[in-house]
Length: 259
Image (tube, rainbow, N blue to C red; front, side):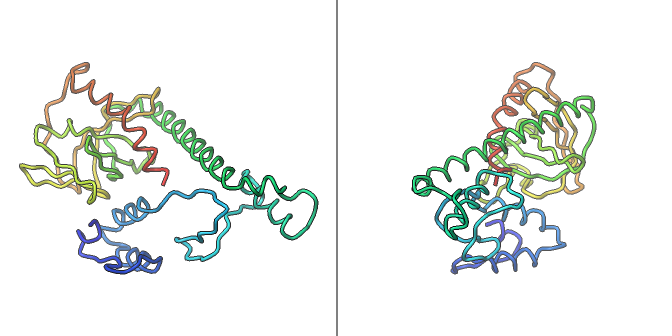
């Protein structure tokens, strides 16, 4: 649906292959739609996980693929290394029969721990960035809409790469309809469409170092000034709701960035 919205097609009626995506990305390179399509393609990909089954690598278009880094940095690398030792009889420190039989369970475990480590790293980075930006509340920043949810927009800042939330409640009194397929919010009265990949100017409204959350106010979309809704006083229900939105957005943000 996102591809159709910019007048392109993607493997309609066919099995999706790597070549289809490459043609799509080449076709939008250097255009106003490039960032939106790149984000959408990345988000559509399944998160990588470890398994003894060989499913190849879709992105690299390889029918056989084993993930390995050198020098060895992770437990997954050590398993591959020891599997090679066992298969080629290069020594006595290859995988045992018991370890080979448990590879499915081991793959599930290290996939889980890798995601947990990534989330911890990102949460830590978010908190440091929020602490650094705490003195810049009220400043304006350029960025890109990097995610759309029924409760608001996620914006990624050019300057720091930090993600923050524009609560839907801060967009004024107009009702915005959320379309998960096209990743858009559409104003029922104005018809204004806010979507993935659009360039925006935002004002930092709040930075919460403890949670790593950032709250933004939307000022411009693709160079067009947005109507300015009346600001809520600190501690009012709308402001308290926005703080709750920060907390709720972390899980969605982790899922979006982890792909």
